[in-house]
View 1 (cartoon, rainbow, N blue to C red):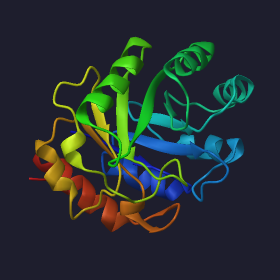
View 2 (view 1 turned 60 degrees about the vertical axis):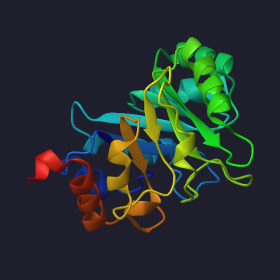
View 3 (view 1 turned 120 degrees about the vertical axis):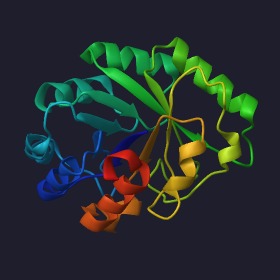
Length: 215
């Protein structure tokens, strides 16, 4: 199981996370978010990320010019499209900066079914996504809600590897190990305050997921 910690704003937190063996760190480039960082902040934060740890740039409905500037100035590896981007838009934007990409789907438990989730995943797979991220739907927010959706809506035959997000913490992440996913993504569940990570919560989360490493 792979682990992504998202929403970093402090270099010390990045260094603590990478020392614990996190697989990916996420930086939020969406100004309304309390975890948003500027290009200058991101440049500093990425200095704390060692080789073989992925830097993920989370963007929400970002236009091509903004994305090109971001890619030119910040050393990131993967784009996480977390807005209303269509498969075609994701493909075109990612190709413009020559980056691999993932798409976040916000699962609406009142409307979505296994079939509808699978259909959306198939569309993004055809457009070239490397993985799909499933998060809880919230009409007011694009992510970072701390809400959990019904895990019964996670397909067992997905066309893309699934990253699970939404309301994860040290108390419930162990229950994800039997789900048809390959990675978990957490932000609020490892924080002392929004954008400020708690080292002991990060350690506990990693221990719950990477059991073999901690035996």
